Image (cartoon, rainbow, N blue to C red; front, side):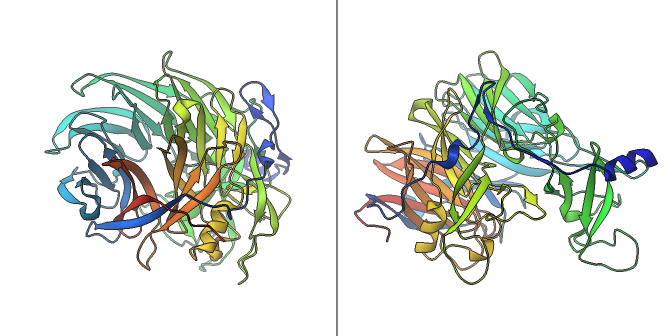
Length: 524
């Protein structure tokens, strides 16, 4: 064992940046196309029309709308409850039902989705270091209709447009520590495909494993201190401590302590952050580090695109053969940014940011997929203005769905528009900026758009894809209140020809409803 630990310590640091792939490489930094400045005339605005308060201080995470009945389901990760909202009168949305899923200790409700047609919703529950489950429930009574065990750490569930298929992104992000060998372990992520009958009962289930991506071109392999922060019960007491005396010297100090190994790489913890943020290195792309985050199903239900956020990649699933058929490495976004929290906001410093998207959707009848480039890793030394890539593109990017080729991204527009509207979080300048989180597609006057939630800026921005090579931010809506909002989930719906957006704001326990209105304002 001492030889294993010695090997861990002696690993040399290198940085390797590869290409974008779909088994045939294209240029890795194709994301350098400059987006237009956000001063162009916009024809749309985003106005808040109502606010739903769950009665809780936090937890409202994912929201999904059934267009045919104008109802929404809303999950609360903190309470394990699902609210059913009436959104038929957007100015007066209100709760119709509240269902307690009666989760066991250690279980967490992570996502919900309304069936497109039936009086049903899907909920996925993370049960820690055991496989999670999918539950199909009545949207009227909350009664359990069907359920099935899926993969480890289910984090998102979505339906196909025809409602015959539910897909689950099983992130598998939980880690275990074995003190005798000083080894960290994690279950592998996967993608679940669940076929449903016309009544909404489960007909079949298949769990798709992700291929070992170590030898695939297109993945970014950084050996310069890139890592994930994970909650891990390191001392086995069943509690995740927010600070810990890792080295046992009787002091809690702001320093890194070597804790063990994960797949031959050193794992460290910071005593002032304790077990809440143990640093797992990303130095390979083994199946254990491929963590599916969110899923976009094409309108014809023939393909699905799954974000692998920490790996800056998208997995492509053939839904006919039910196989993962390839990976697209997403590369980096290059543009100007405000790189430091120093009291001055100037978007004049160059950055190269690995996209690391969270949300993903398809537009233009499945011709393109679009990503919200939030970022989810950290680096010991990287700042946006440093030479090495940092985490998060701070952008929304458009890709050709057939080839994975980047067409264009928003560059610095998201942060610049947030700043123009006095919601830019300058304290996040040295990290990931406003953090685009989740996005939804819509069509206005025959032109495709996406709306994206800005987690740290407490707002939603509307982006025109009239020219997919130059996506343009055209409007911003502010979420009300002075407290932290953190919009996580988003939904879009239409009432009497008018378009509305919902944001589930997990840190304030609310849901904001916005209306998209026609106007002729300009961003200055």
